[in-house]
Every structure is written in structure tokens, then in C-alpha cells.
Length: 199
Image (tube, rainbow, N blue to C red; front, side):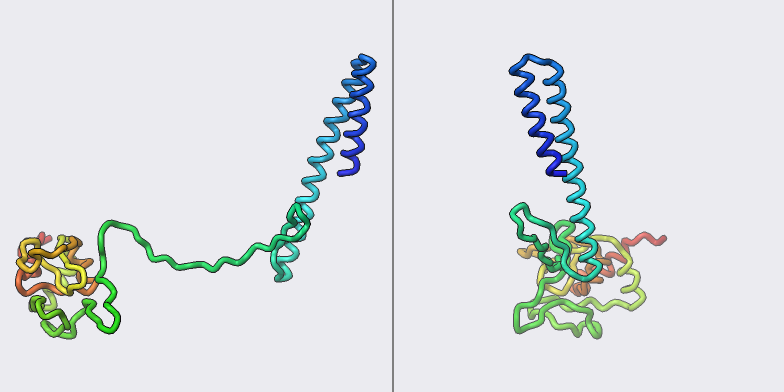
């Protein structure tokens, strides 16, 4: 098709020159027609080349080889394989889980093996003792509580332990799910259960 389009372009140029030199309208119209046929031949040739390339790539993929496409400079272009990376989601606002521990120690809050027996910094209040059935009820509430990054307790907004500390607000169910435990100083579970909707 490329050879045919080149020949048609040459014919169009010759007819155009002859039509302009002789002032002949039919030669100019024939020149335009030859130009249009050359353009059609170029488009058809390009589509055939693309179809051939696609067939070659499909065949190479079936055989397990890399899919290649020809560069205008002649060398085949091989698509590099890019490894997929897992990126943790960053949806939402603010801090939502206890930080990773500093190297060499483990200060992350985690569910305590028994009431008041979890590991915590020395200035941290004790764990509020709660009956298991009450703890289960609190774990279903969406009432907000406050947590301090790197500390294992959740608190009410008026807790004296929160003074001069930057706290984050989140639902109590989420705080419990993340491993926080109730503060014995402000007794959030008792207050939350007293104000919970009885339905």
C-alpha cells in the first residue's frame, strides 16, 4: 500500500503541474482525485500494519514472551514489568490508631490479659474495672471518647489526664477495636452506659 500511495502522489503532482501550466480544469480535478486516493491508500496501509502488529503481540503473549511494539527507529520497545506496591489507605481525618512503638520497646496499647494488668507508662491512669457484659455494651456504642497518641487509655473530654495533652476524638467502639482500655480516673464506661439509649 505504501508503494501505491507514493505512485498516486507522484501522479497527482504531475497532473497538478500540467493543469496549472495549461490552465486545464479537468487535469486539476484529476490531480485532486489522485491525492485523495493516495491518502486513502496511506490510511489503509497504516491500519493493516497496526493489525499485523497487534496479531504479533497476541501471539507472543500466548507463547509466554513479552509483548513488543516497533519503535519508529526500528528497535523493538519492550514494556518493563512494574511491581505492584501496597499502599495503606489514608482515608479520613486525623490519627486513628496507636503509633508504632519506638525501636527496642513495645508501648502500643493492646487488649489487657486481665483488668488493670496491661503495660503502660508510669504516669498513665489504671484501667477501669468493668463487668464483661458492660464492656460488651460499651463496645457497641458510637459515642466519642478521647485518646492520646502513644497512650493505651481512652477518656472522657473532661478527664484531668488530658490536660496539656493533644488528644484525638473517635467513637468508643473504634477505640476499643484499636486496643484502647478505659481510664480509671474519669471512668468513661460508667458514664457512657449511664447516658446510653436503653433501646
